[in-house]
Image 1 (cartoon, helix red, strand yellow):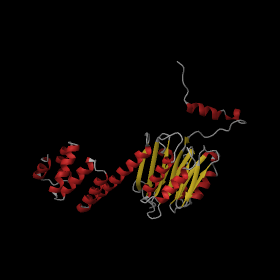
Image 2 (cartoon, rainbow, N blue to C red):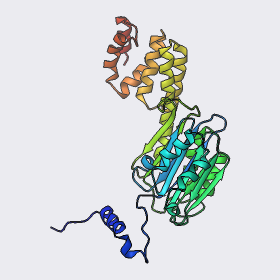
Image 3 (tube, rainbow, N blue to C red):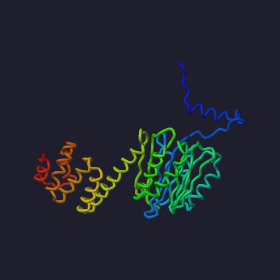
Length: 332
């Protein structure tokens, strides 16, 4: 049987044999993540973020980097992944985004094929596009943000991203999401669509990464990753409210918890999870009659919630009241 040699091995062999072809061909780094992206800081909240889309599997794992109170990096084209963590390390040490980018480029022999965007916690935004990035490429910096793209259908992608970011109302995630949608509407990646990522962190330095994370979404492989990212951002907003409700319940502030759960349910009305916890919170607060229609709705959507009701008193999430449990379970 003839054995097929993986393309990655062929490319590696060509690079190893580069001296043979030195006069005709200069070897290039072969880790491509051609894409469009945005890095940005919201001056009002201090939040920092990065968002990206590409026709490449799991683009977020290598391209998108962000740290609370430090900055964000997008490293793309023929990428050098270390621009992400090292860029954050330099900004954490007090360097501006521009200083960090210059320092990393000074030791990189292949800046001609790199494309990088950086923003720091003070809103300084910079980017670089090497002259040998694949056309159509573009970049643009504005007040607190930078957009960059390569291997695009049209070089107008960056202008579309900048216009959308600057003219969209809402929080940082919403504005970056609008920039991605505008890029895709302009034609986006010439190869099509596959993966996307969006990260938003707080502007508070020194907090653990898990505490400073506002949104951290990745679409690894999807026929329409931008549309899927939009859907997930909506769901993530609802679960943020659910988490707020849980925190209020922990503090004994039932009214605030009910308000948060109700808001979450309004965002994602077909989530039986959110409907159920809204109902359970009302029942725990003594608002049993208000809770019953919600329990019925949740039970109809997912019957196993009935079994969970019987387990909640032991966890302290419903009163240990057999009559109350009977009343909840009797809804039809």
